[in-house]
Length: 617
Image (cartoon, rainbow, N blue to C red; front, side, top):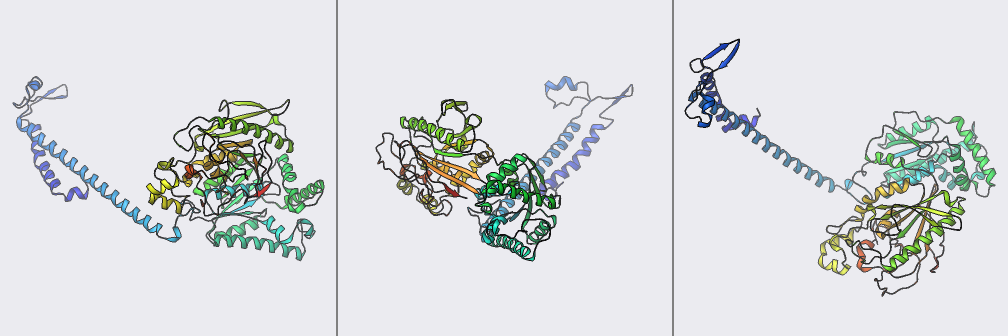
């Protein structure tokens, strides 16, 4: 029995009642005078008499038994007292549980107040709560042309998209920046065997410079550094791991193994010989020289077997993955992303959804307007034409590649969503298109601000408006979503985008496209503009195209009464009746960017024209 029950006066009374009544009841119940026993065949049969206060309906049952009123009354008092004690103790335990829960909530509130008031733990857009206190160094390990750079850059983009401060420190890029291309290096720089003092000094200078970059980034508040280098020596990576582990930095070894000769050959020809190391070289000689580097490295390469350190081994750029001693939220997210990675070349296209009959209403979910149907038809034709040119440039046949189109729930761009359709590209060829509807790609929910203008929102929701203007990325309108909420909703889409090996067309609202692009959050993609993105090992190549002019392109109504002016791709008049979705002047503390800031140029013609190539990260 608990201490609370023992100290309770009422419990003491009940216990005393039990102590006095129970023996009397038992004595009366089992007394030979009241309970004559009949022994029959080693079986005891109790014979009781029926008391007078037993209900008449139970009389026949007690006529054959000898039961006195004292026995019944004593037993009743004993059982009642026991029931009351049990009930009272349960009540005390419930009260104690309530008090404990209240104390826990109070302690939690104090902890939250203490944490949020501490600048060290202050939450911000760039420091998610689950990732803010952890610093990680990822050491890449692998022979040349195994996809280390591709994996590093893809992981960097994903972590930055999540809001984690991440940087790739590439030993090769640093060497090229400080020493120049291959022709400017000593002959024994990449060869196996004893090296000259000059070469040793140069190699040490490069490695020390990279380590300094790593240290500077962590001191500046960085969270994850990916050290993109061979690190093929067990002694070298052990020394690096121990050095940073002593500084409180969590070290993960990421090994890329590739035994597929086709992948290696493709990586060398498409990536390595186009790097600054081989600028101006004959392609065949560049390939031969790079294979020489690989052969020299293979002789001294030591695969990762140090189980004392967390490591991830990727085989053939995503065909198989092995994980050892990986713990923690951010580490698990890294592993999950790497499980979906590949290096197959593909194109990703972004386009706005067509105009609907009821614009600027989140709840309407109406059909496309006549202008919307015209837009969708022109978009289909232009994507087919553009993709055919792209496949031809890549030396691929249209028949062997499928286009995957991811659209929002309320976007209509095809005749039968979800079905494989064939669209004619050129004479004798066809294009298979698989359409996938994603409810996660619905536009941002404006809540009670749905359909309001900025002046109306400022007038009726002055306090919420002030907070929203101060931090439009994290603050949400009443019963609405913030851009942070939208980013969380779109993360599964981003993972599928990374996993998809075919060319991909994403059709959605401006808020969705803005969140997926992330690195250029303030760009406005108007209806009639197509953005082409090509992920590569050393960054992302982007092109913008203009293919359509019509009602709804620049925020006009259904009847097309608005002013219509020609302009650059992405520079459209702001739609004041849909401001919540389009509000992106400072979503992550970055300056407002336009298409011209990104170098997107186009000639506004109805038939469409190609823009200039832009390199980005």
